[in-house]
Length: 244
Length: 146
Length: 42
Image: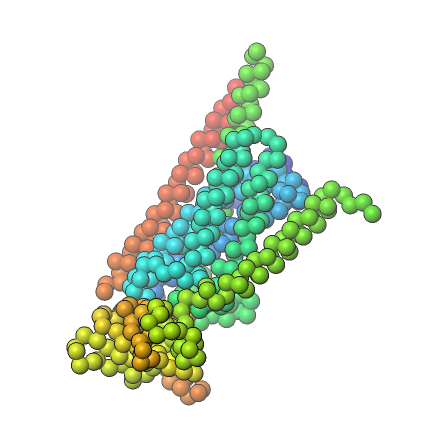
């Protein structure tokens, strides 16, 4: 676990990884978007509005994957006191919040022409909105804790991230447990089944992969920026004490 | 037996996680009925709704049941859930995706005669996506399967 | 109802936000790393 604990060692890995995630991510996303907009046929029932699928699903996945990342960072901080865990949490949270908001927005835009409504309080939509509020609370909590300074660095935020993860299975199973306006899941990863016809499915795989790589690139860049700022601060502090 | 602090914390976090999961499960169990977005025709037939009580009704639009009423603006159709069916009337526009044999959610109230009076109709689609030319093939295959 | 307006709005919003966030993060990272480098070398 502590192999990448050393910031220098982490940076040695993070620097090349930023490029390796950024450029393939852009390429895959570009191919997926072109495929989803211009190449695939429209859906038999929903027509062209079904193309929103190719960006709505990745944003939902990133919103949930982002919180999984926060929870994992929280556990590794509480249990192993991993020094990069707070840093990772700080880097992930606003990005996850943005993609959750984009999921809600694209879903709303999609709901109008298909369901006939921008918003309904069904189980799936409500639990996703709760995830967005959880992100906002996490960001507020983490920054408040950081301002208070040393001592239990980010412990509250870590506990909050772990507790909030209970919302993830609720989002996932909301369409199974309760009857909802939102349709059931199309892709069953465990069984490897999909109710999306192969002719309509392939751009989705490209955009999910592309968005995921770009998400990683953004988080890596944010972590590097954060580390550099900390380094600068410490350097300036030391120079000030040396000068005094 | 003494545990290393790291393992102690691991056990503590795991125990907290299990407790949290159980608590959430209990809460959801209690919520089950109220978190439902709509009631089904079977539940209405079983008398779950009082006449006049506002609710949402969800199910499939029965094939061939859609008819225009004499007043020129109202429609009447039947919503079923594979078991029971309830008649629905609606005065107003239907959403684009409203189709016989497709999903629908009607918002309104139960009339005294057992007919559901909808103020608003939402279309509900399922999780299948496919190109238009495959549509009739799939439907045919399903009909044969049945 | 023309669906393309909805499709373009959803794509524009998501891709625009992604591009903006990528750009801002890249600029912030470059600046922070350059600043840190400058102080270290001094």
